[in-house]
Length: 295
Image (cartoon, rainbow, N blue to C red; front, side, top):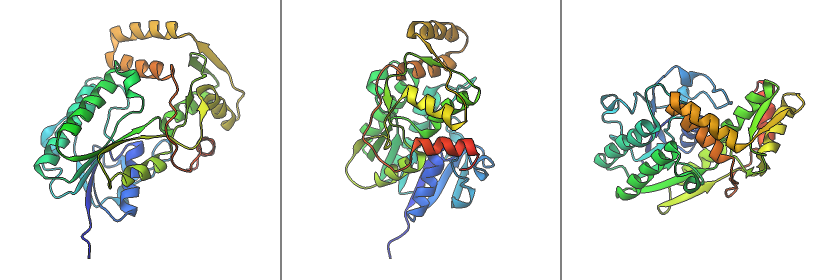
């Protein structure tokens, strides 16, 4: 009888992390999850991601910025999966603190524990946004992982449905300011479809896997779809890039972390993000679920 493999999932309470917990569990893995707030995962997420408390075999309550709280986290596991990263501005922490140093602390322990493979989720089109601080942090860690000697896979999604959910929230307010003309294209992916791709990366050679969803839209089309889903007439005001970048400079004087988030948003709207298509779930259905309050 083949022994059950153990996986450590870092970033388990996030949008992708929750689907990864469910997918690994369905594939028969023993799941050890790193979370900061155990109550958070008892309830569905803001974008329909599942409650996962009942799926976890072992829970580690810790914070990667506090090394003592995650000591021994990789002991006894066969595989590490990390979707860990700073997704919103923090008053004290930076992307470097979390995306790079936090993941490196896990990697160092994975090496000590002789884990067989480390799967990390980074960003698609990173080379076109290399000056964004959060991208730099991700890629610093990718370089560390590749040099570590561990077997690895780097997953590069171009955009989550939860990211598109922000357009839905803006559409609900009745108006969206759009940076640029919105003509660039993207094929974002649902968390459940992305999680399947991540779990499939357990096998095979060390590789980078760019991932998108089944449908390609312009950013304007995504926004219009969001308005239609919540029963509102699209009201979209384009802002020239120079104006957005001017506002970014002012923001940077007061809040560097918020400015970095804005910079990522501005840079991402300057080119297409069309990645190889995976999955079966559609953005239109996701917006309809958000509008209906059902997931």
